[in-house]
Amino acid sequence: MLRLLNKLAARVRAGLAAILLAAGCILAVTSVAQGQGPPGVCHPRDHLLNWLRDNFGEVPVGFGLADGKVLELLASKDGLTWTIIMTWPNGRSCVMTGGEAWRRLPLPPKGPAV
Image (tube, rainbow, N blue to C red; front, side):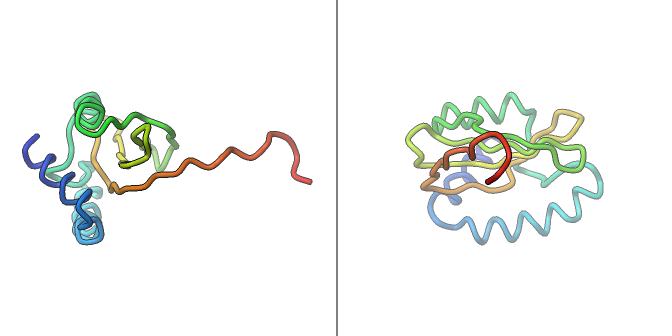
């Protein structure tokens, strides 16, 4: 499984993200209904986080809740690569997409808008 994830991540980084994203969306539609997430790119969360850190230097930089699941954005410190993963309540995490040239925007100031 790690070899498959490695190949998929390399293809995403090589510019085939659009093709993989389209295929992943098709797989996600069928497998999310079964509560699994896309097959072949899913592992326990700790495994994916360690793999992305060790292979791309990516660490979590943001997260949010989506229909009872956690969506996380990971990015490398230099901004060369980024990955979005989704974690289901059972602890299974799946790579949803990834890419290059991540840029962090400043957060808006706290308080009421003027």
